[in-house]
Image 1 (cartoon, rainbow, N blue to C red):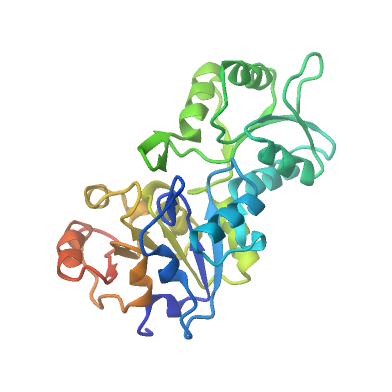
Image 2: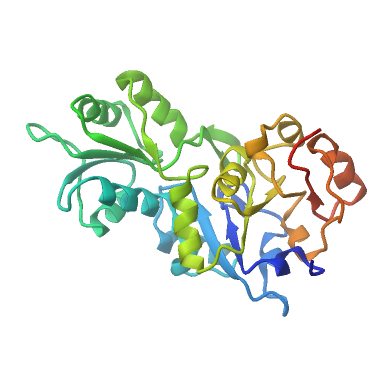
Amino acid sequence: MNNQLRDNYEALLLDLDGTLYRGPDVVAGGPDALAPNGHSAQRLLYVTNNAARGPEPVARHLAELGYPATPDQVVTSAQAGARLLARLVPAGSDVLVLGTDDLAAEVKAVGLVPVRRFTDRVPAAVIQGHSPTTAWPDLAEAAYALRAGAQWVATNTDRTLPNERGLAPGNGSMVAALRTATDREPLVAGKPFAPLLEDAIERAGTRDALVVGDRLDTDIEGANTIGIDSLLVLTGVSTLDDLAAAIPAQIPTFVANELAALNTDPLPDAVKPSEVGASLAANPGRAVRVRATDS
């Protein structure tokens, strides 16, 4: 293994909310951790479950915060959800969009017709992504379509969304409302399901990649779903207590307090999930390798 953790991978698949920023605020030390260092030539892909914004505004936000980002490096669950829809329904089909205009633009880009309301002709599908302006009439319109037989794709099912004030309701909370109203289950494009991360792998051109994220139930489980390594950073949602209680599918390859650990050598010996906290306390700037089980 090379001295720096990041040098062992051809690509880093980086989560955004809780990993690189929280709301409008940058995670301390994040830009420095991802700056070119003369040794790492891997591709950086910014992979987000948040479908509210398109690649251009996401890249612009990242660049304003100091991260090296261009739109072609951004892979969103809106893109993955639209691609999934394009395999499910015929080209030119109406798709009811429950989300932002950026999500509607991704639907249009794959040859489908985004709509917000319908009367006689039931849309072929509903796509649901996070929007802070989603209201009861929007949920009701989607419920009518789903009960009439429309396909249902959710960009992600994150229950919460970290911001500068704490944890706000995420798209998964709104999906739960429709699930209750319709007795239906959506197909999910985002992490921990495979479509989004497979899109990122395709964009990176390699499976020799490390997923970096703050959530066991999305980023880490998603990495395990497609069989690649992962790094959990403790700057967002998941905690050491969560790790100690995690199911096998949510055990990361490495854990670190912050992104700076990418530029250090990880501890050589793997420890139980319940022992990670002690290892980090003794080595706060390094990543800890985690055993697959706590036995």
